[in-house]
Image (cartoon, rainbow, N blue to C red; front, side, top):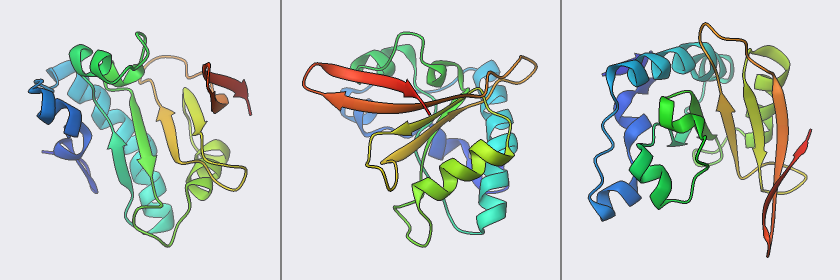
Length: 153
């Protein structure tokens, strides 16, 4: 099933962890509707602007999968409102370019510079709410031996 011109449902539900642990990661209809919104309002505009493939490293996560990977108990991935995008895997585009484009041009709820370094994040987390106010919350994730921290951009 296509969520947008260049993003499939299969790309948004694939998970090596789910496969390894035999976790069902099939989203319900309301989650698929949310995935279609983020695909068309965020993913596809980025894809169309840069005209290069984008990788989705995490989309929908069932509650069980989210717990297995240590995700936040309030993760928007569990309701289909978040994608982790990694442009570096195909070359020709950096995650910083994706981050900056979303920040400066698109509506979003949260945009997170996920780890990486000052030049580019390791991946870009973006969330989008349809028919709700999007906060335009921009954060940068850091990790040390005590845990993960977020600071405003």
